[in-house]
Image (cartoon, rainbow, N blue to C red; front, side, top):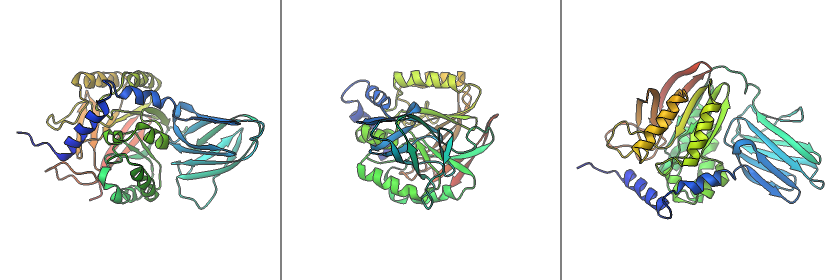
Length: 364
């Protein structure tokens, strides 16, 4: 008899809960994603291109965003009574990012956490294009990112993982494959943001099955979309919501477009559940093998250079359909029995000409 871990039982329970109301539970989430990044009040409105930030607040002369990409393009419409100095706050920003508005460059207020960017910007009536980006965003050159997943019930100690990432030189940001919480409770998300104070770079993530224990709006309103794409320094990153062990047909359509958009770039694809379980006995893949093969076929045709997965609380390096792949679930969640794999994260070197090295950094 195959022993089923407590983590597997919880995952199955989450999938049953998510799927109890309809046979396509991901459809509603995908439609909700289209609402991310837009807000309106009486005399102002905002829209973030491609939904790459959550609008935390739009109020009188104030805009606050949570970025889910290193570069943001924002349209802010200001009405007749809303002109004047605006307080613009962007959380989860690159430490060297600046704000450009109408050819003018604004630097952030000093003495803040590196990922907290606050700007005071004079805005008159009309439509304004804002761009948050570091000076080298369009320079195609090698750089490094960290990758991790599966924090869950280790939230109180995850600051140790974040501190270890911050100690690695030249990491520009973290990409995550989901399961940042255990039960998607508001208190967990609050603590997660507190723990991010130990991280000196932004944290860009998709969701996992544990984020589906709560209403999806709770996640989207705080951290933005779970399926999205951004490009940075010649590399494309595509994140896909597979939180209920499937990828919604609408998200599949988006992926096809994103694969076409990323053609010619180094390309990293991230989702929570592996497309195909490389071990075969751990219930650790998309629930439909046919869907997993279809996804891999598309990724292969799209010349994806690296696939990153979570869900299994271990470390596995393998290939899927010829694409280098890693399962890295070392954020602190209950480890896979007998694997001897503790907390860890990956450091991925990216080059305009393709994938560089992928190294494992152990925390324990």
